Length: 110
Image (cartoon, rainbow, N blue to C red; front, side, top):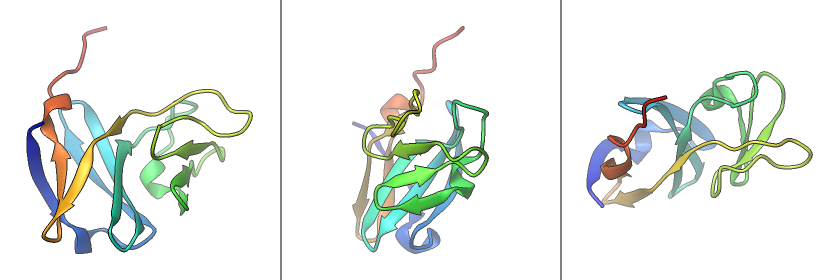
């Protein structure tokens, strides 16, 4: 893995999110606990809602447009909804949020 330093953990509010623009699109960083960060696509597959503006509860986020709920560990939609969001490896070192850069350059052409 090739880790990229992208933010201070303090830049992301508790139970909040921040967006990072990357070659694969916008990635949302979700802070679910004092020292727990998840990285996932910022776009809901249902209607393209900005997940970074959704409600974070536990290790899940609810889309602000149509209430689809996604597990931030797996990206899978919860309940009766079908679909998933892309998730990305992230770690925290010395208060800094690091994102795995190896996946960021692997966008496939349609």
